[in-house]
Structure formats: C-alpha cells, structure tokens
Image (cartoon, rainbow, N blue to C red; front, side, top):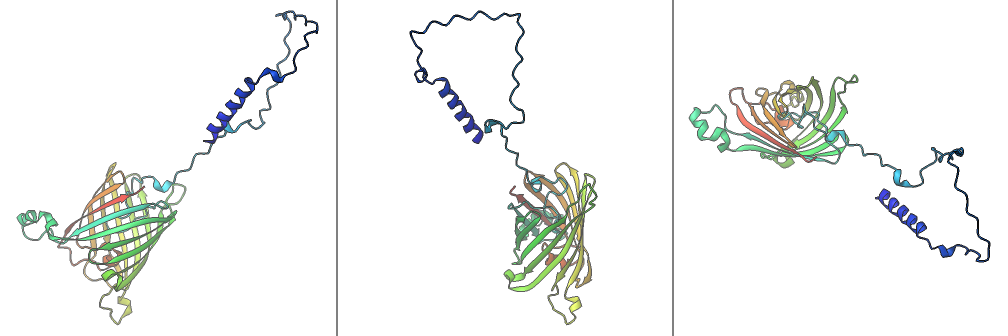
Length: 320
C-alpha cells in the first residue's frame, strides 16, 4: 500500500507541474527587438561530453523502490514425512507443535477381544465394534516455539494434563538425535481419585528416509492402586520403545511396546501395532493391542496377557 500510494502521489505532482499555467511567468516586452534565429547545429561538430548521471550511491528519490523483506515461515508448520503425528499409537513422539496452533485427536479401543468365539461370532459383532469402546479426546496447543501443552480425557473418566518441550532437534550438522522432556499429571474419576504423575525423556532417531525409531525412559509415580507399605513398589519405571516405517509417501506401519523395568509391574507389557495413513492435516490409524492404555499412567499398568487382542483406531487433525 505504501509503494502504491507513493507512486500515485508522484504521478499527480508531475501532472501538476506539466499543466501549470504560463501566466505565472514574466510576460515578454512587445517593443524588444526580435531575437535572431539560431543557425542549425553542425552535425559534424564534436559533441559535448554527456553529463554524468546522478550519484549511484545516492538514496532513491521515492520509496517506491523499497521492498519489504519476505516474512520467514515457521519451520514447525511444515509436514514431517517420517513423523506425521504426535503419538506412535499411544506413546508420545518428538514432533514439534507450532506456536499458537492446535491439534485434536480421537482414540478408540474396542472392548471385545478379537479371539473371542469363532470367526462367525467376530463377524456378527462386526470385529468388536458392537461391544463398546474406551474413547479418548485430546486437545494439544503450541504454547511457545518447541513447547506444547494439552489435556486428554478417556471415557473411563481419566484426565491427563501434559507438557512437552523440545530440547534438541536432530540435524545433519552433528546432532544425531532429537530429545524432548515430558511431564504429565493425571487422575481417575475426573481428577478426584488415584492421582499420578510422570516425567521422562523422549529420544528419536531418523533412519534415512524411511523410518523413525524411539526410546523413551519414563518414570511414573503412584501407579499401584493397592498402595503397599513398600514404597519401592508404588512407582513404575518403564522404557517405551517404538517406531514408524514409511511404506508409501503417505502410508506407514507403526509398532510400540512399553516394558516395565523397575517398580510396580502387574500383568504383561502393553504392545500395539498398526497401519496409518496421512491425508493433508488428517492422520488415520488402525491399530491392534493387548490392552486399552493410552495415558502414561494406564500404560504403566500393562495388560492382562498376550492372548487377547483388541481392535482400535486413532484419528488426529492438525489445525495448521
């Protein structure tokens, strides 16, 4: 707008100068002798040297040549082809959230084991979709560059509040890993019962252009619902292991496991795997797991066994 207005004003002033009335000049004397006509210039006469142009270092007369520097785009907005979502299946990833942007996710873990009854029973229950599910809703927000916060609620009335910060990003200049720190606080019965918290580190590594792998040591406090006298068994140390393999430009295979290495560890480790597709800002994942845990506190409790497997899915949407 500044460039356009300056150009219009300059053209208007030039038009006024050209159209200025000659009556403003001093009138000629009618009694003065006529001025003899000048002879035509000799075309063979040497030409006077041209006057030097204006100083090239002088500033421009108008601001019309000024150019506005292009605005730098936020690199966190760009699609990461190896890391399209903020979770693997339930474990968090190191994907950065752009500042002041939002993302939303819906999770389903259906209650019916896929191996219950025969194949006819499975079909009649539409692969478990007729038997209800544990549903989760998550909203994520970019608080600062590299810092994201969010809230997640599941249909068993568990609420998880989390914060995550990117400490180090993997780069080809000698940074071999990406590192995030994460902290969560959750409670059952809408934060009225069984409160627990977690702190951990998230490590990720790119494998060429086809895969991303993760190792996530996480310590969860107050995981034992029985609250034994021995406080050493009241908390859980687990190491989340997972990966995402790119099989097509927008299609992936995902897998994760959360072995408990110390503290309270009932049942068996939670395992999940699935297939995923990305369409614009949407990500769709169909997964299979031996349990329903999707918060860090739920994952610390593991699963009942390795015999029963459940169908599930994630749907996420990025608003950027």
